[in-house]
Length: 188
Image 1: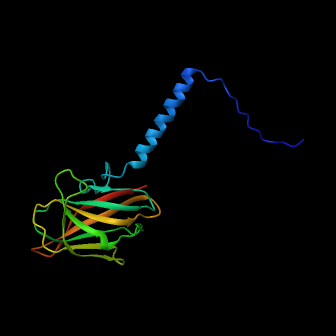
Image 2: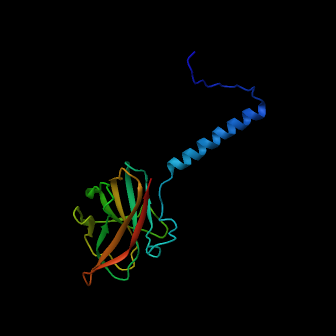
């Protein structure tokens, strides 16, 4: 006689409380799954250790899923000087694809992540060797202006993880890049 692995399925008669419990459990799991699937990354979270704790910049992602098309909303904090360029530096292990034709600058109000008034840009250039994206507005951005850099049609990296994207601005009066912070981005 051959050994066979068998699985026995035991069916218990369902009582009314058991049916109600199962129905509630199924509805709760569907609700939790739908909330998890629709949520997107909205900020850097809590940084407990490391040098970027005080320099973490806010951001929002529409998807936040690896290998997905996404839109990034990256905060540029108000500066005490006019800004002539925004420079984003991506780490080597970031393998996402950025569509430079769909880069925007937007003036934001407090607490707003999406939306805002678009600012015309002259160019958005990605230098593959230095892994930098340089966004140049048509006119200098006045001091104390709250901005977002919006990167649309970004193809997220195939492998999720943590990515530190450093942000600098070029002063309009003295053309020196000034480090303003980092986006500690998580892609699932």
